[in-house]
Each structure stands twice: as structure tokens, then as C-alpha cells.
Length: 612
Ligand code: ADP
Ligand code: MG
Figure (cartoon, helix red, strand yellow):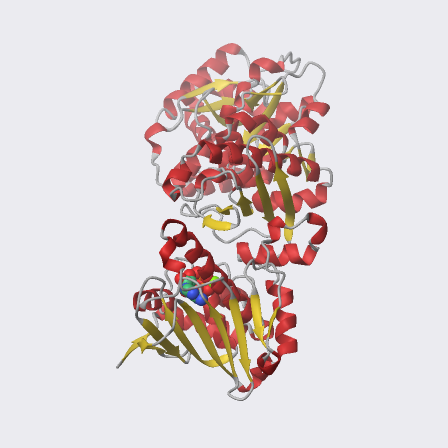
């Protein structure tokens, strides 16, 4: 009796892609299957911690590779946790991971899947690159029944009862006509050494009459001495644990000694993963206790703002038989986290010495790291020091806060910044004119997180961190140019305040504009217009919208003239038209939409025509 089942729709699509677009990288199927076998051994070992009886039939954990030239098959066996019927259906017929649809879309758009296949947890299906039929015989540890799962990787799979001596899984591949190389032991040995040397269980190659040979080093990579590990071995290990395919940007292998001892082997990828900003994205540090895998879900091990770090932490000081839940709240975990974070930050600091190299990292993960200024009270100044920003100083190079301070003008006591959606638009914001005039540098911040971290970092190395709206008092202006007279200016601001009372909180004059007649800003200390736009985009409607202020430049000839005209009742209609256009101009400079586009374009054309 066997049950026939079809693949979930996503699986079929994905299989099609895996089989057809990864053709040139076929040999990775073996790495994926060995990796699964290793995971299965890890899981059983963990289970055995609290249920020692469960692995008693297993003996030593190992992974066996059996090629058979006569039948043209290759079998990958392990004595790990195994699968029951439910597991087979859930894990090998559907794709539980939410990334699958995205995987399919991504491949359709970019045409290549090789870097992504691991990330999306679809490694098993790589078997169908080399096999036109896969037969799995498996028995779950602690259960008596065994099961057989077969599939041609096209329409679905069949499950039937089977026999297996003990727990574990055999994955038998019926090799395709063009994949016969995979029964060649020399070739197999080479592939295993290249991709799977770091696996901590012995990978045993069946040589037929010649017996068996352990092909890999079979010791946990992180327990080996640095000097015995090659760059390629680090890289393959990184691929194994991260499911990424790039070269690591940073490899950090260390032993911490002192009141708690642990080893860390950590990596920072050189490419950003697709799901860096998905809210359900979790850290993926693996925690081992004395080489026994415990969990990759101990979120307390790594702060959120370092969620891009991949790797392994192994400590013999943690208790083996403690539950995962208990571990999460263990003060030892807190201590490890503390130590690990400070190591990573130190290492990042070193890498800032090479600007271009650091930028590879910064472009991928800078936005995430900056969350740390907000989140990590004890390290905020250090993280701020590792951060790079656009500024008015240079168009093509980002700056650090320390460089900013080194360039500060005599008497300048603050680091000034402005926030907005786009660096180019920000640079032309009229609010910056006085700063340009005085040669005072301003940071141009465009990431959503930039709205938040300055609020928790009021000072950096003795410099106040200030939004430019808080700068007017610092600027100490004395201007000599012609200015609109007080009386007419008052008349104009009153008139405009009345006209725009539903749009802006007030209309005032400012000393800080030089080129522009008007500019839009917010009341000191209120949410910036940029943040407000961000909130609006996230449907967080304007319940707490900031009060807008329309600032007039009393030195600008246009304002002088308009103030003058406002004294003449006969010119009221004309003054009002110009006033409306000025408000629109201020909005455009801030990156906001004009209030009435048809009025705007009609009046613009009128004025242009008059000037021709
Ligand atoms: P991933 O390894 O990222 O979860 P795979 O497609 O490689 O994705 O494997 C899917 C799932 O199938 C695994 O998570 C595991 O539950 C199950 N599985 C695959 N191979 C084995 C095996 N040798 N032993 C036990 N379970 C396995
Ligand atoms: Mg896998």
C-alpha cells in the first residue's frame, strides 16, 4: 500500500528552477545532502541529552556515501534523527519556509538561483539535478515504523511502509544518464573534501571491496587551531552554516578565556540577504555546548542590530541538559553576548582603516548597525563612531562623526544634521543656506533610523548632536543687507498666517535663509517632516503631525517687494497668488507635494509668460 501525493504548487515551480537553472553547479547536491545528514545527527545528539535511550541503537554518528556503478546509484546515509510519515510529508513535499515564493520570483527576475538555493532552505531538492528518481528510506529515532518516500521530482511523491534496522535515513539517488560521474570514488572524494571537510561527523566513503575510508577531517572546525584552517575551509564552513554562497567579508575566530570560556567562529557576509528587514527574520548564530548543537534560536545571544552576523558559539561552561527556554534567560548567555558584541565592534573598527573595504560592509549592513546607536545604550558611542554619513562636505565620500568634528569651525559646538528622503534634495534644502554660507558642515541623513538615533545620542565626544532646526540660536547672525521694513513684514506674515491657517501653524521670518525667499520647517523639538512622511507611508496617520512653520527670508528682494505690496489693498489678489506659489515652492524644496497642482501650473505659466 502506498500513498500518492502531489507536491505543493511552490515545490513544483521551485524544483523546475533548481533542476534547470543550476545545471553548471550540479555537484552542490552532495554538499546539501551531507549538510542535511549532519543536521539530522545534530538533532539526535541534542535529543539524547534529555533522553539518553533514544540513540542507543545508533552507535557513533556518521554519514556514509555508497556509490554503486552497477545500478548507477549513489546513496547518502546517516544514523541521525530520521523522519516519520508526517515529517516526510511536511518537509519533503511542502515548503514550510515563507521565502519560497520569493525565491521563485527572484530567480524569475535575476535568472540565477545558485546563491539563493541554500538561503531558502530548499537544499534537498538539489538531488533532482543529478537524479531522475530519489528513494528515501527512513526511520525516526524512538519509533518502530520505517517509511519509503519516492519521487521523480516532477509530479509528486509516494510514501509506503518500509523496513530499516535502526533510526536514520538513506537517500538513494538513481543517477541521470549525464550524472554517472557520481559513482566515481575519486571524484566523490574530491567533492567531499572541497565542500564538506568541516562537517563534524565522519563522512565515510564506501570503496566496495577496498573497504571504507573516512574522507573528511571530522572535527568541528571551530575547535581546530587557526593555523590549521585554510581560507577555503573557513569559507566552506561559512557556506554551510549561513546558507550563503558569497565570500565572508569578515571571519572572526577566537577563544574567550576568563570567568566564562567559549569559542566563537563568526562571519559577516559580503552580500546582504534578501530578508534583512523582514520583521520575522531571526539571528542565526548556532549555539553549541562542547560540540553538541543546542539551538540556532537563542536570540539573546546576539543583539538585533548585529543580526547579519552568522556563525557558531561553543561554550563548555553552559549546562548541557538545560532546556532551550532556560538558556535564553541564562546570565551566562548575557555575558557571552556582551563579550561577542565588543569583539565584533573592535574588529569593525579595525576594518574602517580601509575606506573602500569598509564601504562594502557599510552599504550592506550600515543601516542595520545604526539601529545599535538606538538600541544598545552601553555601546552607542562606539557604534556611532563606526557609522558613516553623507554630508555637505563631500559628494562622493561618506564621513564619520570624528572626521566631522576634526573639520568643525572655531567655536562650533554641535554636529548638525538634516533628515530627508534623498541626499540630492536635502543638499538643496533652503534651510542649509546659512550653513553653506558659513562653511559649517551638515550631515544629510536619509535612513528611517536616522530619525531616531540622534534622539538618544544628544552628545558625541563633547559635541551636541542637533537637527538644523535647533541651530538658529547658535548661528549668531548679523546681516547688513537691505531688509523688508518691520511694518510691512508684519502685515505680510499676518496675511499669510490667515491664508494658510489650515496648512501651517505659523508664518515667521528667519535669519537663516540666503538664496531662497521661503522655507518650510517644524517647531523646534517636533517630529521632522521626513519622519512624518515615513509614518504616513506606514499608514500611521497624522494623529501627531508636527506644526509646520513657513519661514520668510526678509532680505530676499521678492519678500521685500511682496511685503511692500501687501500694504496696498488694491493689490491684494496679486499678493495672495504669489503667497500661494511661495508656499508651494517651500513644499517642493522640502520634498512635499504642492497643495493644488492645477493652480500651481496655471499660475506658473502666467508668471513665465509675463516675464518673457
Ligand atoms: P533545510 O536543510 O534548510 O531545512 P532542506 O531542503 O535541505 O532544507 O531539507 C528540508 C527538511 O527535510 C529538513 O529541514 C529536515 O527536516 C528534512 N530532512 C532532509 N534530509 C534529512 C535527513 N537526512 N534526516 C532527517 N531529516 C532530513
Ligand atoms: Mg538542508
